[in-house]
Image (cartoon, rainbow, N blue to C red; front, side, top):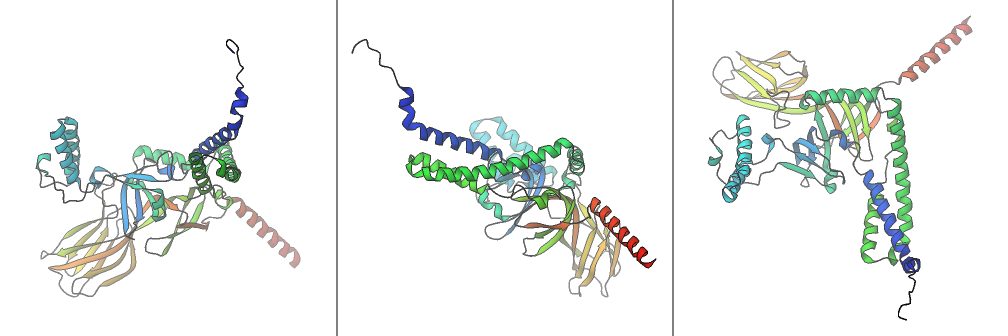
Length: 437
């Protein structure tokens, strides 16, 4: 046998493994196709923008988060990164960074602590501290929190993602204008890309269904690890199959639509705006007037005239382009209170109440910017608490989950339909005139 070359039959050797190799290849291909469509086309519109997240916790508590939105390349969750003034319990963060500098000697920790400290001191926080060394560690405080991750299993608790126009800088405003122009006047190339995307979404759904059906009979004969992998991606494929293309929404993109929205309190509200985009899970509606409820209270002192400036607390932080964020100015004049709208948006006043005095309903009085209303009382108001409830609107773009919002119709007639209706009416009138003749 020495010196005799025995030819190696490669094809014969791998033939028993061909089904396994083919299955692994198909699974890898399926994963790539799924990942290509993983990033939701609605959520990514707000990527890197300042947004407000309205969220209902697992305990049923309403929560509001303000920060930069970040969407990962894969997965369905997202993350909100708070601005420095939005960090919760920053004392814990400052003391941690100072202690890390002492323990490691790395000056970067102290520089970070001083940067955050100075920023917050400019915003009116840490008034009782002169420097970072005076911020002592308090392990009984809740940990500092600089972001909020929304996991896939928490998406059902998301009510809305709101991008207020006040939070946009000049560059973002310009980009938004260009984006709206592309919606109103889509180019031939944009229309073609849209059709290709919708076609690929349809093919992806069908392909995922076919592969899922084809791989299921093979699962019992595969190794355990590969079997688990196939089952995992079968579930992913099925979960991602859905209404990526909706004819009733597709023909309304760029048009004014009416949206019925569920609010966290269990009621419904109607909004109108431009349908920017939709996906299986979300709707993006631009240029709406978002309703914000609020209230203010103060103690009326003895002086004849007081001035009170009420700031909206909806975001719990100052918007960058309107740092004062003052919306109402209240002035006392004898037995009268004069309430002036000093914001750039309309405000609806609901009622005014003074401690020990009958409340004064205002029949939902709407104050336009610069307008003032006078409310009269029969008794002196000194040293009594005054409160006012109001509702304001702010121009915004909003992303709503589709299980919380439904497009119920157009808010404007279609242009070519108007022409046809007018032509039909003119022809009908002409026919009636002929009959009379």
